[in-house]
Amino acid sequence: MSTAPSANVYLSGRTVDDYQRMFSLTGRDLKGRSILDCPAGSSDFALRARMLGAEVVSVDPLFDHDVDDLAWRVRQDRERLVDNIGRSPEMFRPGAADRYRSWAMPQEEFLADYARDRVKGTRHYVAAALPVLPFEDQSFDLALSAFLLFSYHALFDLSWHVQALAEMLRVAHTVQIHPLEEGASRALYSHYRALQDALPGFEFTTKSIDNLCYLHASTTLTIRPRN
Image (cartoon, rainbow, N blue to C red):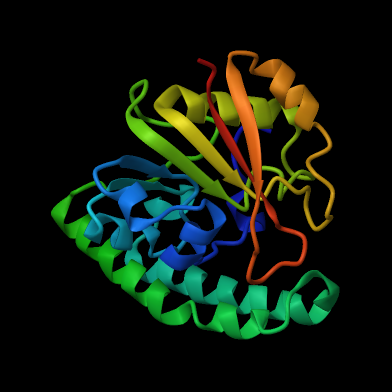
């Protein structure tokens, strides 16, 4: 599969605090860096990171929507996520539903920033989907991707994952993915070794983190060129 089936992928609104936890980033790590957030969903990360001195471009296939249509999808998917906790409570930490509901205000701030971007043409929000990105080689210091690769392994095969990672590594020096766990399981992505073999010029490292919502999503992958 070559493009993301966006109707089947949640448009999540993880906050800048979530990003800093998932990717072990501090304000100092963000300042002065060029960052790609892909897919960005309805996160306020880009807005907040720019306030901390970063240059951030957010990419999502739904960024071709007008503000009202995107706002409808943001609110719908937030409720879908809350409902999912009721259907599969064994996957989530206590308080996860309240945390999802707390995304509402940051998501409204994202929507306001998205609206400003469309009026001013600053291109902070770009409509695109992996595995094809509309950027020059090495445009970014860092690319971040949360809850797409590995999480939707039933939708995206190994070939798509290799293409997606290769594309992010083409446009960014370092790539971080969270989580490395496969779908809703606690096992790492089943083709992890094959990914490493397909990208022999790069170093793969992992780090365990505490996810505030999911019980299984506890591993972040970092990929960078070998020295």
